[in-house]
Structure formats: structure tokens, C-alpha cells
Length: 423
Image (cartoon, rainbow, N blue to C red; front, side):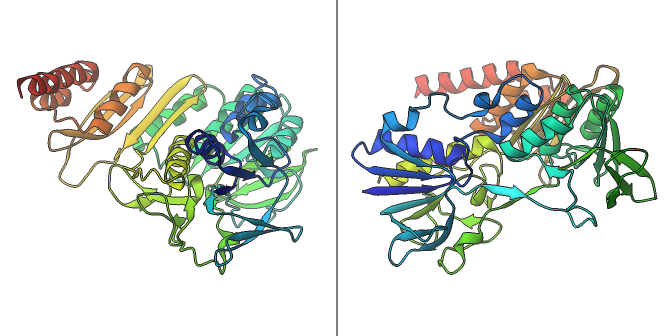
């Protein structure tokens, strides 16, 4: 059996490792299109702040890791086409590679906003290690930097830039920070926190043009309403799109991402998908969506490997989760944080201390939640949602005091254990 994996990010690497563990005799080829060893994009902000060097971004620290596992790693290699009828892929240099099972873990790429001047030198995403090097060189202390986008990725980049001591402006078209992760209260509170730390946050607006600089600066960013921001560097963080381009003519069905079934298999037998490129099952809704976060990529990679090796392990669905550290303020959201129709919710706000909890219920089960500044609740909140524990009387107690999550978890799990003993 020969397994071929396209994509050397977390999903591809974890899949390769689990394939070796599950199928010791198989041939495994892992192909990445960047010249770097496999690395984590989520580690780039730590690289920018100087907490780690380039090697610290690598997913596996030993240079001989893949050799020891008998995994052939080929970096700087681009796959241009997939030909399922003959079970091979075509490479950019014209060569072909055969497979018995194929995993598409091609990830995603930054979306380029349609802004005049976006192609100028000095405008870049923070997505690859090469781009990280350029940002580290250009984001000097006190230099003006404009960050376009305050979503999840943008807020991670914000943290790194602010810690480099730049004069930072953040532009977000939504009415709050991380609008796909937090409601108005939490997103507004995060904005206040960033401004308190010296970051200028512009919400409910967008860049309309990027022009040549003035006042000795490289660039100038024009906003709706006419305000102009000087910049030596402009960083875009306005969302990502799954990398599905090489599937043209392959017969693999694509919607928002590559459509997969419960066993991570695509519409073409023998071809699987995982990570940012896959449209997989959502734990909370049962529907299929793209979740471009590293925990999902890791889970997808493991399950895809097991199924490719013939284990038949269905995917139960990935719980939507986001955890951010923004200049020392920890925020998190899980599951259906916006709530469900007909559901109840409870919230607690301490604005002067930047503390906030919001819990969302469906009947007597917790289905979503948001925390700001309360790290002790993150693990329990995740556990209550994923376990789908019936809360019984503890629902009303949490409605009165949302911080009693640990008590609720212990009481409900002990109650279930007692029921199992009795039966």
C-alpha cells in the first residue's frame, strides 16, 4: 500500500505519523510546496516577538524525524493535477507519483481584499515563514504599521506586532473585534483592552485604497470617511480560502471546501481530505463546514490516517473552538456561542476588570459559551459542551451565576457515574 499526502502542515504531518503507526509496512510520501521543513503557521507570532527562532516554528524538532519513521518528505514540490483514473498525481516539473490512497491536506491561503494598491511592496499577509521574515525585518519599534482585519488570525498577529513596539493601527470592517468569535459585548471589551494598551482600533470601516507614502513613510492607507493612516508596513488578515485549485477535472466535489463523508473520504473513492481544505462535520450542528483552525486539522489528520489504513473510524464532528491571548487578556469561545433559536442564555460582566462570561443553553444542556479574562473556566466549558451533559437543576444555578461551571461539571458527572453503578 502506498499513501501519498499533499500538504505538510499539521493535518498532513499528523496523518503521516498515524499512518506509519497503523500501517507499518506501507510506503508514505509527504509532499509540501514550501521549501521549509513542516512548520506551524500559528507559531509565526511567537517567532515575530522573538520568543522562538525559526526552528521553534517547526512541527517536529529533530532533523531526522521523518527519516526515522520511514516517511519520505519532499519539500519545495508543487502538485499541479490529480488523475484519479490512473491513481497518480502530476508534479510541477512534469513527473508523476502513484498512490493507492491519497490525502488532500493542502490547507488554505489568505484572501486578498479588493483594495486598490494592495499589490504594492510593503503589503503582505502573515501566513508563511518567508512572510514572517519580511515582517520581522520591517516591523521596527515605533514604525507605523497598519493591520487590516481583527478576526482570529488578525488578533494573533496584533499581539505579535504590539509586542514589537510598533505604532499599530488595526482596521476592522465589523462593528467589533473578532466578530466571528465574540458577541458585541465581548468584542467591544477586547477593543477597549487593546486601546488601553496603546493599539488604535478602527471598527465599522475599511481600507478603500493603499497609496504611496507621505511624510517619509512607505505607504498611506485611506479609510472610508477620508482618514489616512501612514504606514511603513501593511499586513492583511482578512480571512482565508481553502486551496482547492488543483482539483479541477479530478471529479472531487468541492463546495466551500472539499466535501468529505464521516470517514474523511471525498466523492472519489480512495481520496481523502483533512484540515483547512476539508468541509467536515460540525459537532454542534451536525452540518458540514470548513473550520480553519489547528485543532481541527490535527483531529482530521488522525482520523483520515486511520480510515486510509482501513480502520473505519467515523468522524463524530469537530467542536468549534477559539482561544486567544491578546496582550495578556485571554478570550475563548466554544460551540454555538451565538446561541440557538428558543434557547436560554446567561451572562456576567465586570467591565472595569475586563471579565465576561456568556453561556448558551438548549433545554438543559450547554451548547456554547464565551469567556473573557476567566481562564479557569475554559477547560470545563469545553468539557460540558462536548459531553452534552444534562445539567438538570444546575442549569438554573448557572443561569444565576455562570461562574459555577466547575461545580456543575463535578455534580453532573458524579450523578451520571452513580446512575451507571445503580444500573
